[in-house]
Amino acid sequence: MKKLLTVIALFTALITLGAAGTSNAANYWDKWPAGKAKGPMPECGVNVLPLGGDDILQATVDTYCKLKPGAYESYINPAVKKDYDKRAKKYADGKGGVLVFKAIGAVFTTDFAGGKIVYDVLAIKDEKSIASKDKGHPLNPETCATCHAGFNGACQGGFCGNRH
Ligand code: HEC
Image (cartoon, rainbow, N blue to C red; front, side):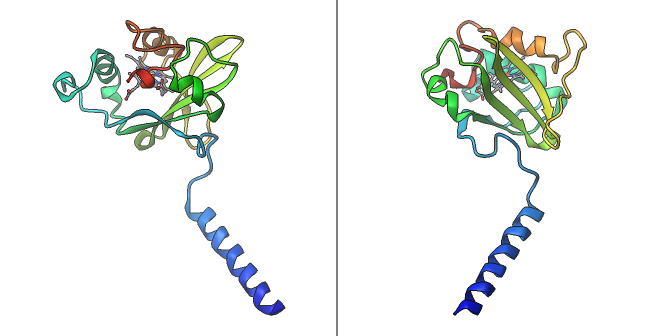
């Protein structure tokens, strides 16, 4: 019996090792609940309004289509998920949410520090910032802020995906 247990334990360890070897490195948002923002990023020139999109989604497509970022999905820090669900105007300091673009290995992040909203762009592989410092660049955190600041009430407290 003892021998059998040892064999089972060994087997389990091997399976765990195998799984870790084939999957990608863990990211801090891996176990977070999904947010509402999710979808394909259409090609440049596509009008998303007849497809059920709204003005802010059209502006987002027009800004990011050139990067060919592929489909995106979002994850929200469980610590702020309740506030996200009720579209709070203000969030506690800490991590907020992420918008993951797997095809280009990039993730947009919205966090809170010192009562302010902080935007960044990270490489998925090492979570290092790849944000741009060029004025008006789509990956410059200032560009994120101009849209996320409100957009006629579509965004609230820094989040836009929870608008409907
Ligand atoms: C032109 C407007 C616009 C710009 C610019 C923009 N976003 Fe967004 N962002 C959106 C919209 C709209 C959504 C929700 C998409 C949906 O509903 O499918 C969103 C979703 C997100 C989310 C998921 C959480 C949420 O708010 O629902 C994060 C994180 C995010 N954006 C960060 C960024 C960062 C970082 C930048 C800059 C690099 C940026 N965004 C630039 C409009 C924009």
